[in-house]
Length: 433
Ligand SMILES: [Mn+2]
Image (cartoon, rainbow, N blue to C red; front, side, top):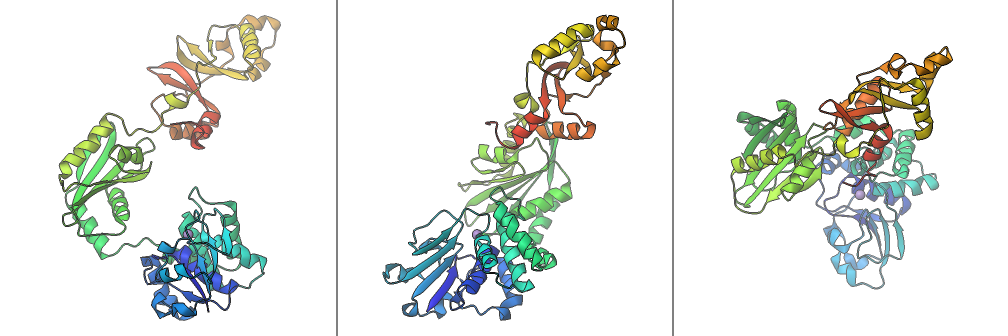
């Protein structure tokens, strides 16, 4: 008897991989763990009749000759198959996208793809398997879940290609949207209500912040969704929820930020947690519950600017090649040739007053005009940006004015220049922290 199974706490990628594997191994019996996530449970409650799934307990392990494992590669991730670990005559096939686990396979398909089901979809495409729209939809759900709709950094071109192939096979995006919906149930709703009763609002370093504390009992899923809603309702720059579980002796803070320059991931790392610029969390081990103290810590970190992400001052180029407004066009020509630039900012006592480029030489009619000052031919411009602004703000300015370089100023003096390349390099992480 051939069995195909997947990891406990099955998500859509696991379920999709399991179903896809039954098309590759038509004789295999699909075994779905009892523990599946809430979205998968909702999906299965509607599509149950379409899949003949067994639970691990319904399997007589002695009959198993081949174990096909999808979206997993470790014995500990499986439910109910541990006794098979000792069997030496067992054939094991693995289709996975995680780092290899402790299972030893006689046939291993493992690629670092964004979703596990992408690997199986690729195989189905190779075999020219005919898919029903329903199956295409389930496989698409799997890819979207593991890649955050193709937005997570782990997403590969193969994942995107598989999505295109599935859309061609009439995967239904309305169904996908239904089941990808964040689980927001009664528990989350009453928690949000609780938070909205007494939020604390504060302005710190130009940011508007909202805080709320709430007591929880045991594990509450999707707390980050609650904090997200809280922030939406408060329309502040950042929102923080403090959740205290007295029985569990746990206290957790979850933060969300809408501001480019307020990095909550960095803030939470300062509190011993983690996250990314838009969302982060930290957990306190002690039985200490003093929301005010946690608020104070967060406010203090923001006040002392330990949360600011990279500023233009950190990524700009300097010193800047520039000319004084009184410089002659002749000297400018020599400078441009020497430095190999096409254009430079023009300053008057350190203040940016315009830009001048090679093209402006076309405005000259007579040779004598080479003695004229740059001021007469420059494009007057006051587009500049403060050194304390974020790379995102510089990018917006460049797009708005269709320019590739913006002078960076501090106290009205030009201290550097930020170019499109500087901003791109920052976004693609080529600059160390
Ligand atoms: Mn997966």
